[in-house]
Length: 380
Image (cartoon, rainbow, N blue to C red; front, side, top):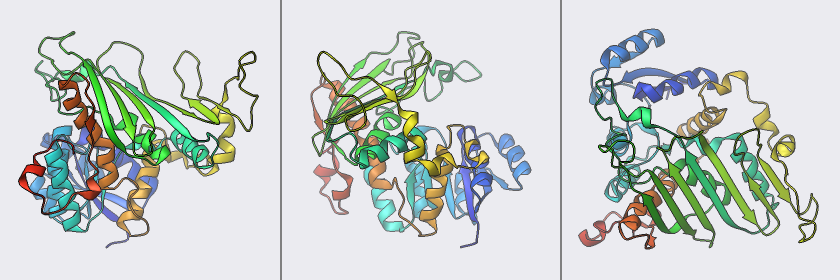
């Protein structure tokens, strides 16, 4: 491989942030672009000194080492499989797939190719998430038994194209878009969901053509017995809060900021006042622990924020490049990617049964020669 990893980027609306990060991280350059808007690809390619391709197959036939899949969600799995079969490494935007069948095909493709697959779940790379992760690993929360995440983002403007017709977002999608909320929780506690119970508020409240749920609510149990709660809402008119998390353990707790001047906060039994009935514990600023626990993150270079989500894309791309160079395994490999994605697919089945729990499969156990009846099972 060349000193610089050559990337092809698919989908420029989201992929532009990746293009910006390549120069900030170093050791990588974008040499190929593909977007359904070919004139847009050509303009961007001219600025980068890259090649613009008129089809995805043409991009895969080029000499790129890796492909960044930043296309609309319905294409992620099939484009990832095609890239792996073409001998390219893959960094895929979330979610990894929309069906369990696509998930199984993705696992097969990764195993057969021997190439790196990583999910670009940038929220797991947020500085705050990393700080809470290190506090957890240091035992500061004690035995964690509950966590929650919320992704509240009014995306109604994205329902419509320039002609007024519905985009893929407006037409709905299979599975709950839960990885931004669930992924960081599972990363922090190093666990996997085994059961999900979910409810949905029906869609059509703002436009009768848009039938995807107004809100999804998931309650989950993990291998280690944690209870997790995730709320996903892309519709409600309200201030955004896309990165709310909370943890509760036997010796401490954490809650992210909510808004209106609020800040993220912790209470830690070994450092703060006791928790008593007549003298309750008080919250303390999470940021006060940053210098002690994430000094490396605080020293990130100025260009590390070019991705648009703090420094998360910077650290994510560094990890992916290390995996491509065989210096370290990918942090969110295909199995962890499906740990983040499959509960959202199974949530739809639970919703259809009025919230009955549905088992979530462990993709590590999937084989290459499963019987047809097992391949048809939705989640287990």
